[in-house]
Image 1 (cartoon, rainbow, N blue to C red):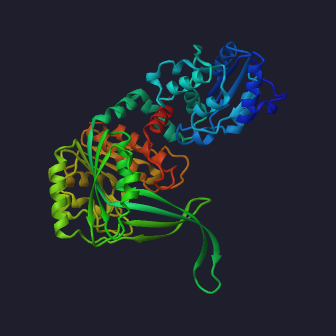
Image 2 (cartoon, one colour):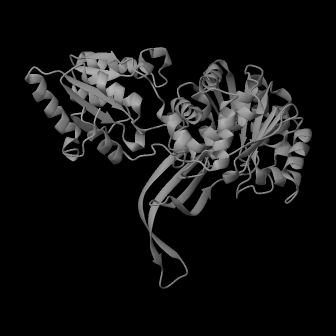
Image 3 (tube, helix red, strand yellow):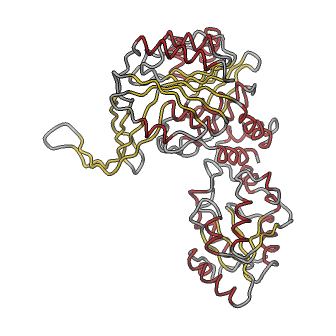
Length: 513
């Protein structure tokens, strides 16, 4: 297959232009073949794929996945969509190139209606398709009068080549991944995650609604020491324990949620509308408070948070409500395999409730968060027992009252205090440390390459690692899966969306190629 620069730019068309061109060629009795993919690093396998595809018809069209929908994890694609399209257009065997504007090929297939849609042999078995899209693509092609064809050519992995020669990670992370690949395959880890569907999970914690007000800073007021900002728009996200439950429900089939809303401003309709369909909510309604809302003033160009205000009443639950909550938790805990507590310290979970949860849970995974509303008053040690504790380093040091001591010693002390089988400590840009008596200390580097918003990264880590810990996963796998979750979460603004299974599976596959 030869390369040609002459006329390459003229071969790149909009989807609408491609639809017209394809219709014209088909009206002339020609067969139009379509290939679709990321094509981040074109290699000999791709070249053979295009040659084989070309033999299925008269005209070969290739569409590429746009950057925003590549979904192979942080740092991908390595090459932007314009450059990927330009390179494909330089191949003599390809007649036309377009950049898709949807997450999958489905809508493009409906618009373009090719005679033949060609995929690689990796997609011939629908059971191995992580996205589940190949069956829908076949239906769409056939509905448009075309057929699907699978090539059977030599295969290479773009991800493996990129990992080896164009790694987006520093040398220490690349070395970690090379060593990790010797112990685990992507298929093995994905199979473990898919096996979590059978777990019944009870999630308990504080509801927080994260309200983002996007504003442009105009400048300092000339008459006061205050910044003036122009309001642009706002978005409301389901945060706190709602986010934890939504992350969990993507991987676990049966999730029960116990949380608190305030009767003064319940927002119940919004909350229930934001929960995934396999979450069964049970609300405690307190008459003396609103549902907690945290409003953040955010500059949209870089998602810089400038100011925060909280609508919150963080006093303890009235005695009658607390007693009812404890009875409900003790009844529900025995019906579930795993209890996950996301304790944000806003008055919902008292010391008495924490003791009850610790006593009644078959397997307890817990985080007690330190934040500006509870700083120093909401410690992990309020739980006398936890099977798995997941917290960040400042939260761990607060609980041990040790600001500068060796981290590993503090982890061991906390493990003994909680009688914990496992502890995970997240450390921002320094990755995470996971500890068990059996495995010792395991350090895992970060996998993120771009940070949009750190809000909720620890919640995503807890949500994905808690069921893995309950299922008996070792410390090194917990750290890996947790940091995969964190890397995907920091690319999401607020809790606008959850960490979903398919992107997790695709990212794991990308890392371990």
